[in-house]
Length: 227
Image (cartoon, rainbow, N blue to C red; front, side, top):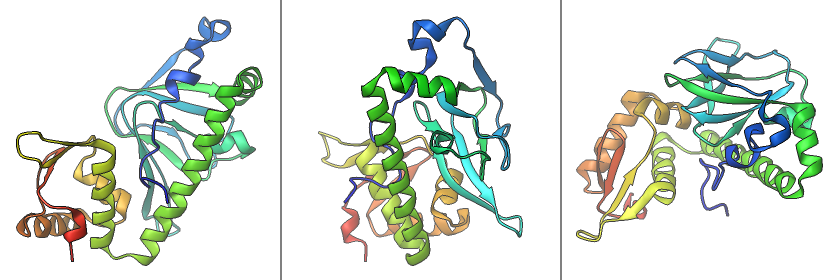
């Protein structure tokens, strides 16, 4: 079983893949800056690039026929998106939107990416590991959205936050988690409303499981104790 389902472990592909790291491409490459709520691409746009986040956060999602927004992922520094273009996707079937001010993104054309992969076996392996993990993560997330209720989804998300960002406070023995997600981010990712999320979080607080403030959580008990 994957050690977590919401995040890509050790996923800073920016450090490995950005053309600035390769002398042959350094002079002809720029970063693009996006303000909050600006779109990087839309559904049906040509899929001829992949993107690396140097700074900020990007939301990946799509709209249903009824116009409802469905969020597939919220990505941060070091992560890649638009990756299905590597596998031959010609048109996007999702949108990518900046959700922080001054989001900085490195764009890489598919021909350049393929050339980098041909010349660097370790890079190729890292990318295919990334693709495999991303697809498994989305598959697992879909299972949770389809078969688990809102409370179970919140608990699963919090458990993965502990694995990704948690550390033990030596004075108290409690687990402290400092993470980059807003309540809106979390609600979008687990497919629930912010009021529902707040109700569940307050239930966990009243049960003595945790306390929370902005982007910090303190766990007093394990989530396995949640009934």
